Image (cartoon, rainbow, N blue to C red; front, side):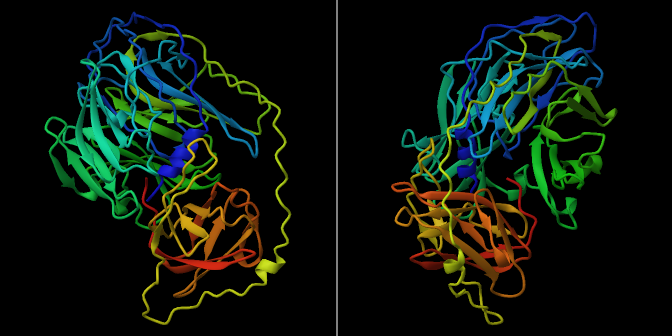
Length: 550
């Protein structure tokens, strides 16, 4: 699946907070048992949700008495009630008004357990540590006693280095890069080295005792393969696709349905959500280890449990999980089960916004002792928006009167899938770029994915700046019964499942509409685009679901 462009669009909306001064960690008076392991993985799809700052390291020494410092990805298990400790977290605040870009801030700090007080680490700033093509995730390394600009999955097993991808030529994005380099940065030695390069698109999956796992696909789209890189020698070997921790075993969803990947703990435990976040929906949170599925919780979205996890990390206490809304932090262990810690000292909610959200993402071990930092600052109030131009009023009748030229296929006829077209897309957003591929005859192209499934997934319509008028979108299954449900912001729902896009391109920029596609069944589908001066089609093949994670 091609989702880099969606991540880029989310990251573009966010800014960086100013640097701040240094925290204090007061020692614990409690004598508790020693030892600590760790490891985790942060989501993606997002979450897709919104973690996008390259905040870097602070050399904050966290040396309370009572426990030894935890190791990076190993150690001796400790009792789940071995407190007090301070859980490293990213605190993410987001606010938005309709028609405007979201306003987001990310603070790095600690939640004191068991009390639940959140404190921002005012020394979490860096200059000079390298960051990769996908940035914005941060991790507190107990081994280094500092923050580093990498997700938990990209930290070395000893916690002293991290890996990142550099795209070439310099300044390139995944939309226009010519090659990729995998680098390892040794924080202790302040040494950066290239360990592998490829002429394809490379994305990091994880770094564990077996090496650095990456997914590799042609920049113009194509089959995705997994490779293991030896960080010491640069030697590579192909890995099986089930090595990707975000892939949910089919045995976990025998009847199909939706799922999302919440993260991995770095020691073979992968956490998934079965079911959507829609209110009233039945869902489960499960841990998958060596093919075995353990259910942490089964309930209904909106029930009194308020178990809405986001992000995971494990240490000697067990598996830590954040929660949408920021009301609590969760801890699960085999011995103690699932328990929660209500969180206090949250940032105040900003005023003047129609939508606001807040979440804690676990970003490291629960370090022994009580952290003393500074209070979290909320987002500023909403500014008075600049009036947006009114969308054009479109009479859709002339376009809906055009005939649908899509034809049913004869029995046994293979699906005539549209060929992939190389595009050079320039948009007016901060990144100034878009997907470099599409399907169809133009001037409107289907993009966003190279494979489609019977489930909900993102879809893009790219409109060449040579056409600036409205576009009518209609679809039908060509090899049987079924339909495509297409929906999204700034789209007009018309009769018989048609969708109208009033605003398309704005020369010299391409139009890029982002929406959601839900096929009712696997099969061969035609999508017809009609404008004032053209009619064209794109044909896609939909495979059985569910939609793979990631």
